Image (cartoon, rainbow, N blue to C red):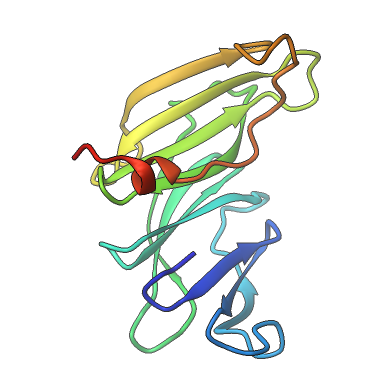
Length: 169
């Protein structure tokens, strides 16, 4: 979600679309028409997060890489500004499944999981937005972590609710 423009950004893995939440019919008059996502060959976008302070849309993909997309003054659709590889950070058995941005802390958070396994292994990574591919913390979660005995599946979504509800700077 882009609070600057009141736009909900979405991807199907290969394309990006921006839907104006100010429109009475956002699907019939999108802010940014469906456009190919700037991805490495064969990769799928697996997570999006908006960064107000940089006026940027962050995108994580299955290659795995992390990209910062800027919205130029001449267009309503984001363009690739920077990309870094996460191949040296994540195990090759894991696929990124989500992305979130902490505006207050200027941190990127993403998950990587083993999909299709009996007991998926999940890792949550944290990096400073200024050095997005330099991990400052990684938290590994296996199988039935504190979930009342329920199997913890692959992480496919994250949220920045921590920012919204925290009173601490």
